[in-house]
Each structure stands twice: as C-alpha cells, then as structure tokens.
Image (cartoon, rainbow, N blue to C red; front, side, top):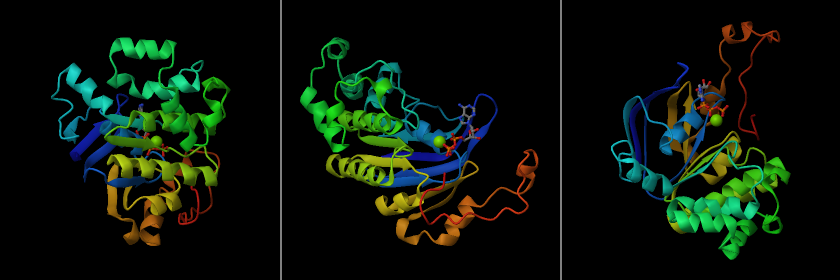
Length: 271
Ligand SMILES: Nc1ncnc2c1ncn2[C@@H]1O[C@H](COP(=O)(O)OP(=O)(O)OP(=O)(O)O)[C@@H](O)[C@H]1O
Ligand SMILES: [Mg+2]
C-alpha cells in the first residue's frame, strides 16, 4: 500500500530531516508516528503525501511511484491521499461548508469544482461529516471566525469528506481539549475502518497514540527508532525516545537547566 525504502530528505536550507527511513504499511493499517519536536514527523508525512520528493531512497504510494508519474498521474494520485495539516491551510474568508466540500476538488471536473465553490452542491454531505466532529451548527460560519480547535476540526471534516485511500494526519488533535481529542481520533479511526483507508497520524499525546493505534512508529533525529505493536511499547522505550538532548544543546540558551531529567511520557500530553 505504502512503502519507503532507505529514504533520506534534506530541506532546501540544508537541514537534514530524514535519514535511512524505511517503513511499509498495508491497506487499512493504522500507524501513529510519535517522537520529539523536530524528529521529522511532518517531513515524513509530507513525503507520504507526495508533497515532497525524497533525495535518496524510494517511495511507493498506493502501489505507484509518484515521482515516475506525469503531472496528471501525480494529480490523480494526490486526489486519493488526504492530509490533515498541523496548521490547516484554509483561506480565511472561506465558509466552513466550502472548506469541507473542497476536500473533493481534486476528484471533480474543473467546472463542477468551480460551481461548488459558488453554490455549495452537497450541503447534506458536508453537514454529515461536520456532525461527526460536533460542528453541525457551523456550516455557514467563516473559517477566520472559528477557534483554533474548531478550525482544526474543519480540516479533518474536509479530509473525511474526501474519503481518501490514504489518510495522513499531522498532529490532528493538537488544538483540542482531551474529550474532543479522543472523540476526533475515534472518528478518524472509524473512517479508516469503514473505508479501508490506511491511516498514518503523528501525535504528541502518547496516551492517545497507544489507545487508538495498533502500531507505533517512534522517530528521533530523522530516524525510525522503533516500529512496534502498541502493546509492546514500554515506558523505557518512550523515555529513551523523548530523552533530552545532551547539555551542549542547551548551552546556547539563557535558561540552562542545572540538570536535564528524561521526560516520563506515559502520562498525558508532552508538548
Ligand atoms: N520547511 C522547512 N525548511 C527547512 N527546514 C525544515 C522545514 N520543515 C522542517 N524543517 C526541519 O526539519 C527537521 C524535521 O522537522 P519536522 O517538521 O519534520 O519535525 P516534527 O517531528 O514534525 O516536529 P514537531 O513535533 O515540532 O512538529 C527539523 O530540524 C526542522 O527544523
Ligand atoms: Mg510536525
């Protein structure tokens, strides 16, 4: 379904973000990617979304090599991949309903897409996905009048409406309270179960990752440090994954702690 083989990626500014990352997932599998800030989770998800091209190694997405396809082929592939962004790229004056319907723009003809922005065509469909995220009353609100957590759920509603074969979610619940975070992940999981979509989500909340995802990929310094069933992830593995950098990393800053304790990440949120 998806595979990365020895993938390396360096951002244009020279920042090396991924080294020798190999990862494969079957159709319908659910993976959570966890790890400290800067570990490379977003970069990994962007590679899986065919938004970034790897400098080294090979990527296959939905049985295709995205970078061997022509422009139309790449567009068609991207239309089957849904991405919930860490910061949703939604035009501010857009209405909620249009933001949700835009999830299928890539699958519609140019005329249908344009017409749907002028006159929302599938209100019932948009309403149905918004209701799953407790946003049924917000259909005609402007996106720039929503709270951060509401906007984050609009980004998720858009991808649920898209019904992609590969569902990628980068910190999808980072702006939500604990109850909503749980209910929202439940919806992403339910969608993957009902459509057979592969679901890959990055999460800072380790407890949520362990609760909702059968498979956990731990990333650190651009590498996969473990890839295990959730039941086999131990507190020691988590402590090592999130252990602070050596003191030299701190010396540049003013607030140098006398001693850096490893974080105990098993309880609640870490960010
Ligand atoms: N657009 C970019 N340009 C240059 N460097 C980048 C860019 N995006 C990320 N990086 C760098 O690549 C590395 C990995 O970043 P990435 O955003 O993938 O980490 P992350 O695990 O998603 O972190 P976080 O948990 O904070 O979201 C970091 O060192 C970061 O500084
Ligand atoms: Mg990130």
